[in-house]
Amino acid sequence: MDTRYFEPMLKYVSRTQVALYRATDGRIGGTFKDGQPICLLTTKGRKSGKLRTNALIYLPYGDSVVVVASKGGHPAHPLWYRNLVEEPRVLVRTGAHLRAMRARTADKDEREELWPRLVDLYREYDWYQAWTDREIPVVICEPI
Image (cartoon, rainbow, N blue to C red; front, side, top):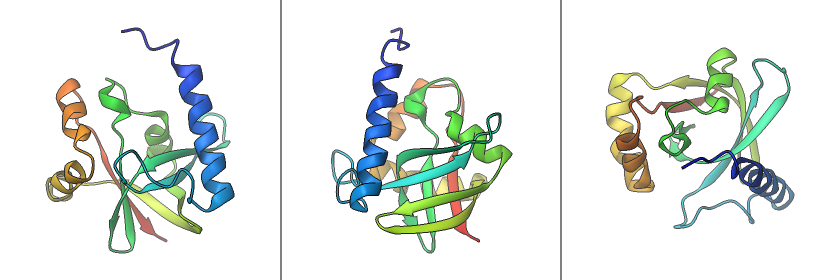
């Protein structure tokens, strides 16, 4: 299916969710359909240099936050992931709590440990992985 017609709507919905999340400290927009927690991840655009914020399901992991660069099983990595590979300093907001963090792709052992927990959190991740030839990155955001 050609998704280019849905992209403007998805951008609008995403921007609206981010704005509501910020305005309410996550009381609105802070969970996904089955109660999965949502964080706001802010990266620096690798080309524009502008700050870009995305609402993502996250897994708390000690003092760290784990997110998945799934893009719904699309063959290409999401732009936010490409941004943080270029510039790993990110901002992560969970509820009212905003933290400066350093993002990195989980290594093989970490991914093997985290992937089942992420699928337990949001089972569609397994489907997304089955739909694409790329290994979907697991990203660990650690306190600076």
